[in-house]
Length: 112
View 1: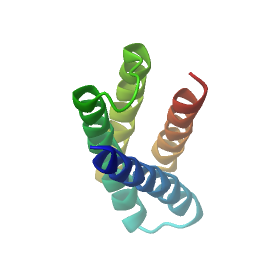
View 2 (view 1 turned 45 degrees about the vertical axis):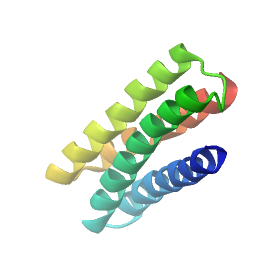
View 3 (view 1 turned 180 degrees about the vertical axis):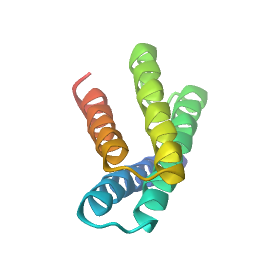
View 4 (view 1 turned 135 degrees about the vertical axis):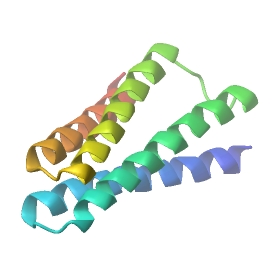
């Protein structure tokens, strides 16, 4: 169970790196693939976050702060929605908001 949890953490961090990369790609270029990178990375991070909570609850791998998880869930869902909106009509403002929210999610994870 611990290996599964660590593997999900690994995938979760890859999703975060993808969100930041998509955000920076869209700011620096007009490449349409940046919107897909941001959306797919946000979905990866959202799904792996849900799985992490499920595995942690099932196996008592980690102590859960449910308020923190709820805040992170709302922020992650917001990033996914912004990713979908950004895919439909690319705008740098949406990418900036998604990138800032991803960074806020890191802050919640580390400091709360």
